Image (tube, chains in turn blue, brown):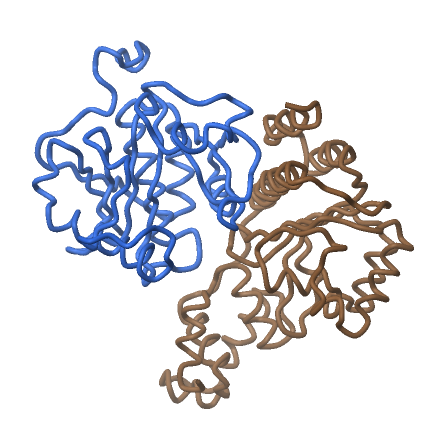
Length: 220
Length: 251
């Protein structure tokens, strides 16, 4: 089972090696092997949304980063708002403190297995656990169509922001998952995750600025 | 958004609320009726020489046609079915690629389907919850001219519906699962080992292995070892990685 380390602007220095390894492996896969993104001089794969507002979840097995995800508030420029706002015709472009843009879901090729019980299922549970902890109500973004079924199969309620379209040859859509305790439980059940996965080290940065946190969350 | 788009998103909102799978399918067929479809099927795809029938999850194809399809084992040469093995991209039946429509009997199968009210259709390959290659296919009496938006809408309908069907079906009582020992025996036999060889490898009597293989077939409702392997894969009892490992000495 992975340990899902929460990495953000405050504790990034504790994860220098892991973070760089993660960016290097992404670069090898996306830029060098598949040519989906340009090859960079430093061998690291970064995009315009790798900003101090981003929170990373690094899934570790021992000292290896085997999976990752990135969450951003939808109130700052994000992949959906900058590149795919036209794909949100059903619900409009999300822009709210408690709606998180979820990108860069990645599993090292050698850890991609079959079945819901794999590393990807564990990362999905880690994202849901983090979102519940932080008072996020919905998380999602652009995803390939086949991943939508993986989310639904976990028993998650998923809101399609718009209709799927073909992006670079693949059917993709923008969709958001409702964050609930029930979703975490059913996700854990189907992914065979028996315990919390999150690990927090060093100073933490709340995803939602406390003053702006919805009242209901503060009370509960 | 068009009225058609709105009806698609409204269907998705109520997809978890139907009283039964039949109600869900009635509702789905009403929505896809706007796109020209009267029928649908959700099924797993068979491996090897296995029949398709046991893999069907929900079926609203004309009964006579489906009986014929199963009886004649059309899945083996049906261009639509065969193309699903090679692509996860959804496609219109009449746009199936030449290498599949050129198969022996493929044109005749399409002709027979048309006689049963399935002139054209749209198929969305999906992986079932247990990672089995499956497809949801919509059929209708007219040749189709689907826009990219129509196709996106149908993809969405197919994905939400297939997941809802599977989750409902899985709420039914859990079937017997294989023990670790049975899994081990199945993997060895799938690698071509005889009962005697497996008994030597595992250091038990040949009779014990025979007992295990009988129990495996019974639990998986399988008629022979190939069938048992296929069903064990389908149910997620074993996975392709384990199978590849057990076949390692043969490659």
